[in-house]
Length: 146
Ligand SMILES: O=C(CO)[C@H](O)[C@H](O)COP(=O)(O)O
Image (cartoon, rainbow, N blue to C red; front, side, top):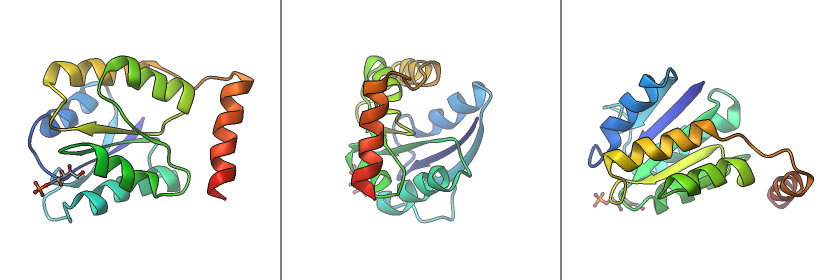
């Protein structure tokens, strides 16, 4: 898959994130502190990664900041984006399955190297649900956005 990755700093697991995503065979487009030269503030770099998903340039995005909150808020401002701040593997799997989340937001403060691997494994393994109830929820999000 094509992934856009953004982080406002190289603290914590940000650098490892790039390697872990590539190790899983995905191509990456980098923003913020992951791509020196670009604007690294969380509102800018995380929304830029989310715009790639909205435009179809990327399949998914992963956005990071110290808390993960700014990253998720910025991404969720972009049309068609459903960003989920995940702190463990079960939450990441649920976000993909029930929320059809197309952007994963991570906290650099909370996410250890081990946790990163677990979250990414769960995130990539899970697929959006085809249940009517789940699809209705996602459709309602689109309605709220329109
Ligand atoms: O968590 C964040 C936003 O939600 C940012 O990573 C945090 O505000 C960055 O702070 P600083 O630029 O002082 O390192």
